[in-house]
Length: 233
Image 1 (cartoon, rainbow, N blue to C red):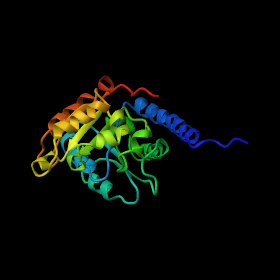
Image 2: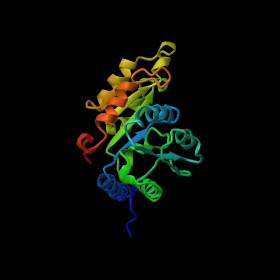
Image 3: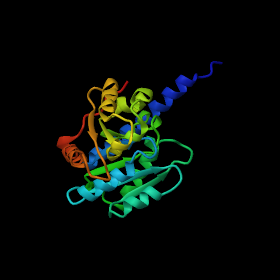
């Protein structure tokens, strides 16, 4: 009897997850919804970015949020204040959202709202710098955040997320004068991993760079402006 190796088990899990992600993507495409998967380590500023994004874009776009959190709805409650549908998913001990969890969020969204009236679904993933990037959820693009407080070396030490990202937001740039960190070096390190990634330095506190981010979202939301799917394998 040959037991499966850890590698084989991991590949099988990713394969099964990809089937689920394809199913989710089919739902989004049928409804004419664009989906972005927003990922970062804890504390990089995902929820603050989404707050600014909802405040700026809900006059023009119909947006819903699928909010992943291990145990609470604290972030979901922050986003509900902007009057958009927010579906909270508690992952328990899991350090990322997977396609099955997001499928549950999609079906909850469908029961309570008309998905064909939506333009954009933002998935806020669980705070983790590794696992979320390995599990597709049906998104049209991956958005990674990296706070300057995390240091210049993180893209080199944790390359998977940065390799998969379509956009990297370098956050909390307002703190740069107080830290021994070079934002340009962060971008250079990211481009060693992913030369094609769009890099946008931002500050949710001062608003720096947010207009560039909002413009990117608007350009890539809608059938004609979708980001091509990342190649598999």
